[in-house]
Picture (cartoon, rainbow, N blue to C red):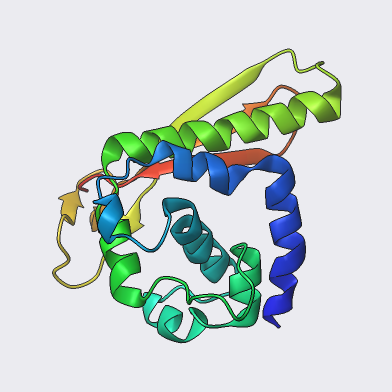
Length: 179
């Protein structure tokens, strides 16, 4: 059930990741014409994806869902969350600089969590940047033939944080580039 989002929301209250994401985004909307905060839309979208509602169409129903309202700091009888068209405009307004600031926020959270876990003992932190071949099929926009991989593909650049003595890698960003 979507009630599984309640512990996720508690974790988010501790690490404040959605707040940091919202702070990384510039709000160019006219305040007199807005009903949804950037923070509320960030939470609605992230929690929707975590609950396996990747499609924005789902949010036309979820916008009035009591659990989704609760994780967005609204009571069930308060106004609905953002509609699918509002969320689409929101996502399409995000620029590259904002995405970079969001990746910095993820990196800060991961590094701080490791610092607390290790009580400040991390000797070396490496940011690993690698291209990752993502094969495409059909005529997809920005897909190009890559001779090294011998396929039509996207070639996103992925950034990963690696700690000195840990087998774990923490992905922090993926930048889509033409193949």
